[in-house]
Amino acid sequence: MNLSAGIRVDGAWHIQNVNAYHSRLKTWVRKFNGVATRYLENYLAWFRILDKKSPTGRNPPQWLSLAMGCHA
Image 1: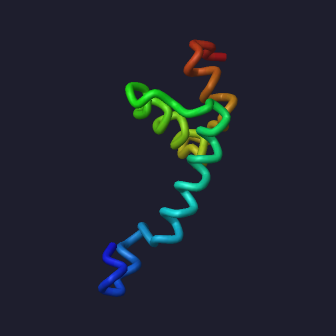
Image 2 (image 1 turned 90 degrees about the horizontal axis):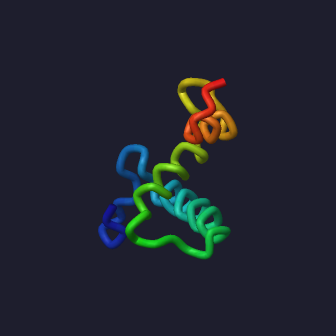
């Protein structure tokens, strides 16, 4: 995206979509009082799963139980 050249949309990455995603991520991370850079990739993966509907039809509590090893 090149705002100075007036390019604001590049496929699905519209600047407003990016800003909205960033806002949701900041709000979610705030409850952990920040995260260590070492674990940032893990938190981002966790957030991506919780932020969107799963193509498998699972909801966040089901994903959490799978992550904990409860395969019921």
